[in-house]
Image 1 (cartoon, helix red, strand yellow):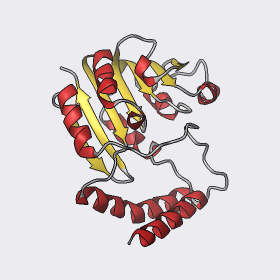
Image 2 (cartoon, one colour):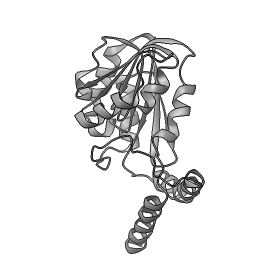
Image 3 (cartoon, helix red, strand yellow):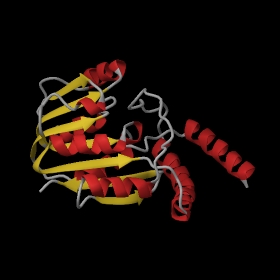
Length: 221
């Protein structure tokens, strides 16, 4: 069984290399649907090359993107046009636990970053930076532990193949990656994340998702 799983994962990696697509960017439209049509300050934690930050700028008054990788922050600045009709976007090289330079925020987003951080400390930090009435949206990775986790992971395989095929049709040049940092496997199970999130963020809504992701939405009273 282990050998079969290993061969399937290798085949999946080969297919993804031939038909690349961004699992995190796939959730950007979903993230926007969790947010008000207009809001003030927004912070994107682990902004990568700024794809989500630029989407937030369409609705926000100000957007701040932080990332620990200086090269990817430079790339985000290059890709973000100055003087456009959207809100200004400020990119800063910073550790996610340091918080953003703008003080407090009406919106905080965090995509595929939380599993790199001490969970309790990060969630408490987000809570402290969020203004009353503000919204925190997380798309994260969790370690597969339960039968439900493994079944959803298996269901993600054919869905991943289909999405890769559809998104790569007619594309001759691979899409630029949105981050350069090495991604490490998640060590915390979804159950543990749920328990910690509900302790730090009472009323938070969490859900397992396809493509080896989970989502968290919390609105501060």
